Image (cartoon, rainbow, N blue to C red; front, side, top):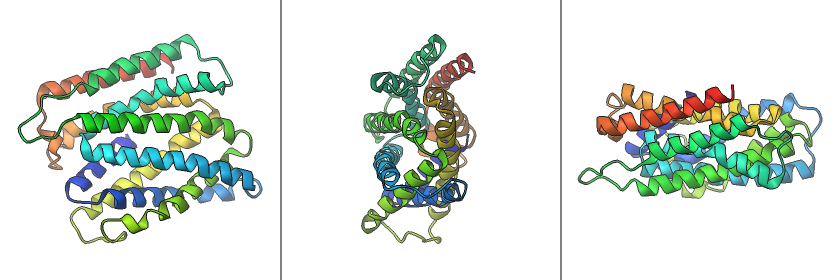
Length: 282
């Protein structure tokens, strides 16, 4: 639910003119700040190897995050967020491919992942284009590319987190993300800490929510080593996004608030299929 609201507010911020690069930088810097306490709850100081591993994983995260915000700019939030649900089957595939799963993936999990894939296809089926509207394909391709990057991260992260202290590894990954994000500062479109423009409050609110949900999800994956299951449950963010667009889309003056009832119902049906997948593994 937190991610869904954060994505919608981020979409609204960009529709009001917020720079994409500035939105990414603020979101990632807030992520880094949120993970600072993990250092104080970990045992010992990070080694050079942990910093190197964390930096490599942070680069994958930065790639996925950049593709995600580009997808939100190019497509509807109620299309992009559900499409990210393809992560569930990609994570399961990558775990088997790399031999990183500590336990065999059972039949119910595979059924849930396959069901999630059918749901993603239903949600992502392009809406009939309105005159003057953008093509949905760029947003779809960018969203699926972002999902692939995050799937790689989620499949590798549990393996490395349990070679050391998971709390310390989380700090290394997102601390490295903060430093890597500073490289993007010369490309920001407007002052980073600006607060006066109409889009600014939406940018800050989106960054805060996305950072908060990242703490919850990454901690679950790091400590319990269930990336496939977590991603299937996380797929329900598509359902929350569709519901929130139906509820507050017009109030926020989102462009997708004007989508046809059929498109909204189709995306809702796909999100319900994702919810059924969740039931299979809980």
